[in-house]
Length: 58
Image 1: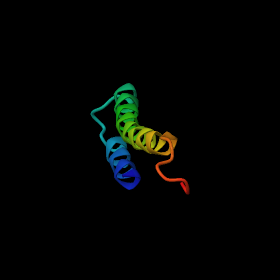
Image 2: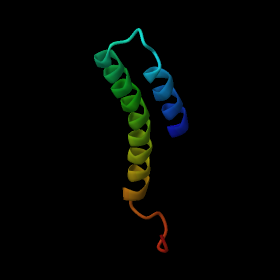
Image 3: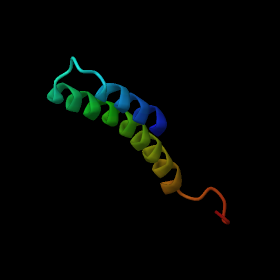
């Protein structure tokens, strides 16, 4: 996903019809989407690892 983001950011930088502010806004939005998915996964892992042990050896 990070490689896809890098490619999109390079493509975005080459768009001359967008202002610098528009480019910055789009970059921020793309990063937010990527990091929200990471946070969702980390929250799921946190829920699993915080649960009480199901067996005595866990």
